[in-house]
Amino acid sequence: MSSIWIGLITQIYGIVGTIMSDYKTAIQSVFPKPICKRIESAVQQHPKPEDLALLFHDVAYLTQQAGQKGEDQPTQAKKRKLDDGAAVPHTNGSSQPAVQSVDPASFTTILECKDVSFQIPARKKLKLHMVRDSQDARRQEIRLVDQKTSMLEHSLPADQIEHAFCLPVPDKQQRQCNFVLLPKSGAVSPSGSPCEQVMFTLNEVAPQEAISAEQKAEEGDTLVSIAERDLNAMLAKYGKKITRPTEKEFASAIPQSHRKGEKAWHVKAHRGSKEAKTPNMTFNPQKSHARQESHPLTQSDKPGYLWFLSTGILFGFKKPITFFPFTSIDSISYTSVLQRTFNLVIAARDDPPPHQTADAAEPEAKEIEFSMLDQQDFAGIDEYVKRHGLNDASMAAQRRAKMYNVNKEKKGDGEAGGEANGTGEGEEESELQKAEQQLQDDEDEEEEDYVASGGESEGEGESSDEEGEGGEDAGEDEMDADEVSGEE
Image (cartoon, rainbow, N blue to C red; front, side, top):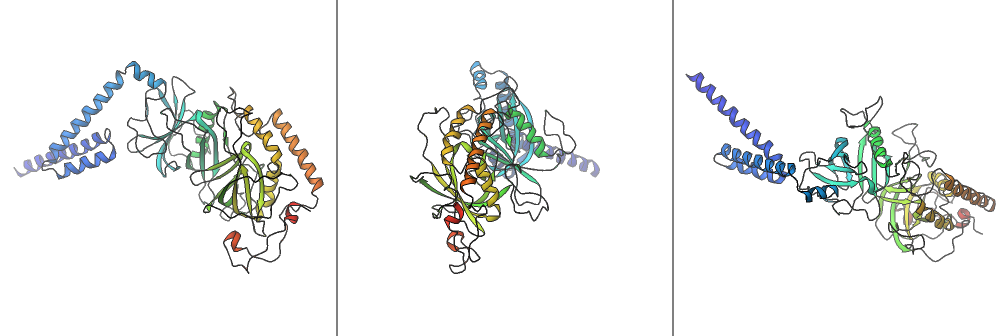
């Protein structure tokens, strides 16, 4: 008799356990996480938790059925909204979950990667989705999805991406890459929200499961290589591609202690914006390499990394990431050139409005100063600056004029015309390179006494005023401007 009772009790507990488990699954598929927590708390405190759990299970089921019925019988108005890209409201730059599920029926998944570490627009782990409209292949999006609720948190339409980068994470033993996606000026999502920058990190490891729906993993493939190929294929439809650092453009002269024999592509720096108008002065390419005066930073230092790329100069990785395309740079000069460090000053203009014509008034230039750059990288940076004509303000107008003839969407692989800097391959670029080379030859003839390494200064150490280390008497004297710029 006792065994019968024990069996009945066991069955009852099994049924109760199933009920409690099923109701949690049901409510989590319908309600936001905060609501689920409140429901679970109410069930636990109720005198008859099983009854209340069954009630919420039924409520969740009916709610889900009602939603599916509405999706199965959409009105014409809803269909039009979906075609316009406004059927799924979502936010950019906000951690509030969207009110609808991620994937409407018309979108197919290109890539799905779980547990991706995002730094921008939100610092959290999310699911990375790359999706395409099955009815319109040109409608593609990068999506950040909550892994537990499957709700859309942020999205960036692929046609609103202006620049894309894949950059090795500095100073890390484990090999990782940061993917940086920068939207166009004034870009908005289908819901009308401003598009935000996106940055996420992927490990250079083989995927444990298939993440791409359109390509098979090959031997030696990593999460980075697969995501890069899918993203490049997505951007190619808009004449864009991912930019990576190359030794041809710039490689740091400082060896990496944690990776013997490998080159670093970044330069450590501190940013301080003077946020002032460019002073009225006549720019002379023979006298713009360095300036003796040093301006104090009006904003607190922000440490980061400078990347000298084929499309421009990027500073990251704190929010917001700053990118200076060649078309925005007026000139580059140096200040506080010491024995161990120097400062880099970029005079640049904000991006013009999307439909601005070539004869419209340009935004005023602002100077951004980056301090504490290692002197070992001076020669490499100076060679990069000269090669792209960034030391000569007279070429800035030419660079900006070419802006109106680039970024045209092409039917090819998107590699040509995808950069907004006019430094790619082609006839226009060749002419610009010839002009830059001619300018370089002229400078070499007129500046035979120019010291590329920044010269030598007396004494040792660093000044406390310029670099925040040591005392006044323990510092070193700033280099003569004549010694750096070749001025008489």
